[in-house]
Image 1: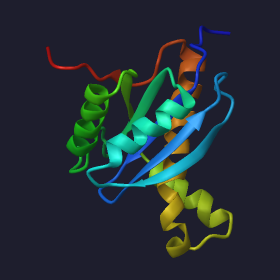
Image 2: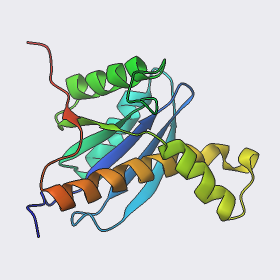
Image 3: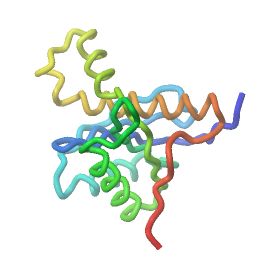
Image 4: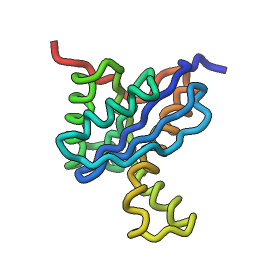
Length: 154
C-alpha cells in the first residue's frame, strides 16, 4: 500500500450556472454528493461554509480539458474559481483533470433511470463525486496527490 494522506477532501465541479460539491471520507473509500451551489457572487462563500462543516485537508477542483489535454473555454474559469478559493480560504486547493467526469455523471444518472431534465440539479454533484473519487483512487495507487497545487501570487 502506498502512502495515502488521510483526511476528508472536498471535490468541486465549477460550471457557469452551478457548482457541484462532493466529499470523501478520511480514508478515501467513498465520495458522496453534498450540494449543488448556484454560481453567483456567493458561490465561494458557500463552498467555504461547506468546508467549515467537514474540515477537509484539501479541495479538489475539476479542470475541464479537452480530450487532447488542451484548454477549453471553461478551463480558465475553473482556474479562476480555484485561485479565488485558495485566496479566500485556508485549505490547500488542487486542480485535477476532469475529462469526461460530466459525461460519466450523465451516463450514471441515465442508468439509474433519471432523465436528462430531471438530472440537471444533481449532475454537477455527481460530476464532483466522479472527479473526487478519481483523484483519491489515483493518489492511493501512485502515492502522489492527483493534479497540480494552486499557488497564491506572492
